[in-house]
Image 1 (cartoon, rainbow, N blue to C red):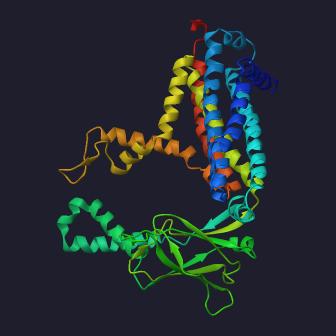
Image 2 (cartoon, rainbow, N blue to C red):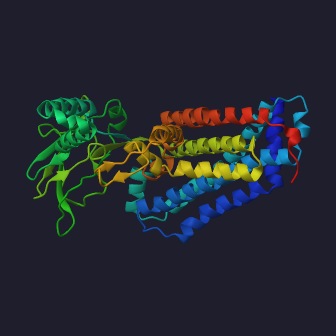
Image 3 (spheres, helix red, strand yellow):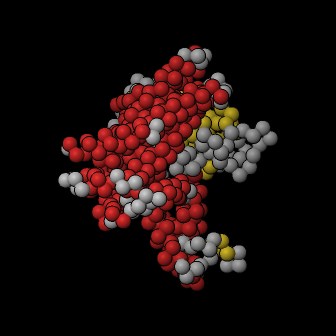
Length: 460
């Protein structure tokens, strides 16, 4: 342990020698203070948190991430190039402890900087909240500065797949030649069935039965919110549609009916409903009445969602920062891994290139979903094909799997929307990002560091 602590201390000394810690701390605190001043919000609770949480935490994550990569590459690669590592390596300390000690030093620096800037954002958030009108402060307390869990109705994926298979067999029995385009036919059948489950024709109602499960105990006695979104193929002159909602059982006292609402399509709407409208089994019945002359469509995945208060904001905020810290730990491992067998400029370039690839997964996702790198072929009326698809598509799929280990979390969006960042999410982030992704990079880096001939490194 003394050896690891010694390497951590050397890493801290290098950060202060390069003035990195002081410069990054000043930049982080300046961004926390300057952004809310330079960018004015609209005076609403949503606009307020958009500036103070979304922008500031995004800037903090970006600055801290870039400085982590730079320091991780520099602290190892420069030590090797300047022949300082040779002095350390001849001492009775294994190379894996040198590598791990540097990693622990970098992540402890990140923890200190993240805690400092995160505390500044939290203090500024509480202070600026007192400047809002009372009505907006109430919205802030109930919808933003809170940890809200969510429950959605079932999407009936299994039933949808079974019915798709049944109808597909019936089509193939009538038209055996359709087997040539069976995958495209499967998509068409599935989308047709899915559309029938989502649409609400004029003059009809749509009923959702949402099982709150164990969440009913936490939600009892507290107001809840419905978050809804619908689409339509036709638009009115005023751009909105009339919506009437009923929640609960009409025959019981646990019943609420809304006033007619004017809602715009293709956007999310959130409104409060009274507490305790669910039955004794925790099932919340939600009814939508379509009084418009147009068919409306509620997507199965995001058409309706029930939000309930699950905990306080402070602990939720700390868990969100914990996930950001997991990202920094993986970036530290990435920088050290590249610096283990590359020079400082090449290691920094490689790390930033890999980071850019991880942030730009749209092309990878398109190639994997279409099964080719050729894109759409107008003559064939579908995706083109290339001989290299056999190699490229599996490689892209593997890259997406690795990248999604870290990208499957959105703590900043969750905090700005008042969503809960649960302990399970934080534990999953630690397991996927730090242990799996960071651990894999650490194994690569330590193996490269062991194989590197330190005596061959010369100062440029």
